[in-house]
Length: 87
Image (tube, rainbow, N blue to C red; front, side, top):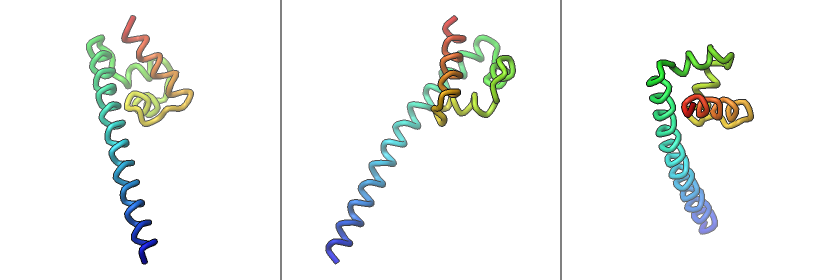
């Protein structure tokens, strides 16, 4: 019975730690998303407009800006967004 109790405790501690990490990542990505979005809007462009103007899938641009996708294409899009903002 003790082994099962130890397993449950470890499992719940892992769940709590995973939630803390996820929450921190989400807050960071939300801040970056808000910054990217506001910088584009100040230039008169929305994320949708950016996607359409450059031939990117709209959903991928949003996911890349939010930080929910981190593949090769999403990284390319994110770098392009940052370059557009900094130019």
